[in-house]
Image 1 (cartoon, rainbow, N blue to C red):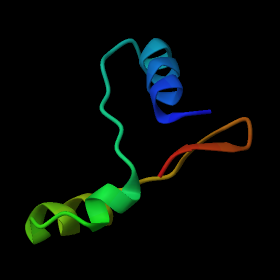
Image 2 (cartoon, rainbow, N blue to C red):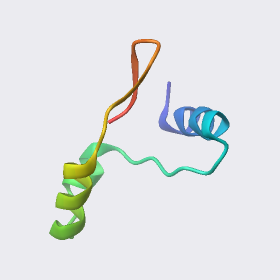
Image 3 (spheres, helix red, strand yellow):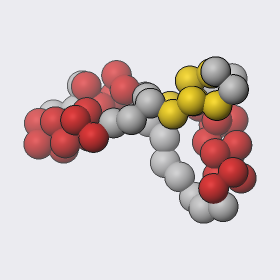
Length: 54
């Protein structure tokens, strides 16, 4: 399943727009404050035993 498919399924489930990004793009961000904040607040979401987002 690709990121776009996951995004659409998540939007359907919660009824609002979402933005999904890959963890590696956050880890490579030059903005260290944003990078640190996002990585510290990140939560893993599971559905039917499958990871949807980390």
